[in-house]
Length: 334
Image (cartoon, rainbow, N blue to C red; front, side):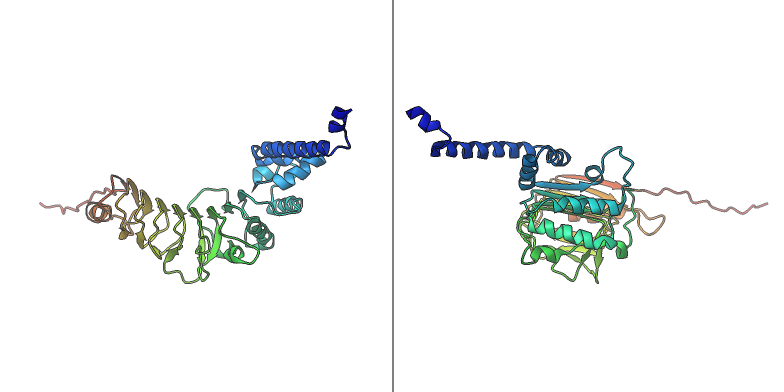
């Protein structure tokens, strides 16, 4: 009788045991969901109401791409921007609350006319305190075309500094084929940002020089195919380790990063200063052709580069060299 009372359904220990089992089962199921891909975890929500409720509360990564929003091989639904936006909106409506996200990714060829939809997604991302954010609207064709600024979506940095948003949780930020308003505070609000990637970004306003953020946490900077007159720092970036600048047509570079270890530059020959960077282990320099059709970069390679990178351990230089023959016209003589 005593043993039955200890495990009977009406006993408090039995109720406690049931609660513990429920908690641990949900914890295990949540751990399983966290190890699945985005498509796999979302499909698990179709199994039962329990899985759907658990998925809504345990979802830690949202990845919206053509591969995740459209069934592979299904040609009944066109992969248009309108259908993509409708599917993302429908998906987010299923999340009644804002989970704390580890990753938030949108990769699709959206434009400024889709601002109403994208703004809603960015606000969701901010309120969810996403740590790793990718907003990439780059067209599928890989080329040097940067695209017109008037068709690109204007990324709202102010959303992350609003009363409902938070920028302190952001660790990585990847922006592609969008516009940034240079009259705003730029990236200074991302105090804990570690990695910043800008690809085919258009800057609104009179941009004379892009000032890097006043955040000591920045470790990696990558800027490619962005038309920038110059790049400089507001103050020494103590943790900056890696800098990658490709096809930005810069006129000057002034960086102060004492612990810089890797420097990668693809540009025309320009003067640049890496103040206090005495620990650069590797530098890769690809020199583009000068404006002159027969110009070479030999003077720059032998004089300016060694002065700017005097402390580098390993230096790799790639440069095009134009070789031409001068044909002399000789008059016939008798």
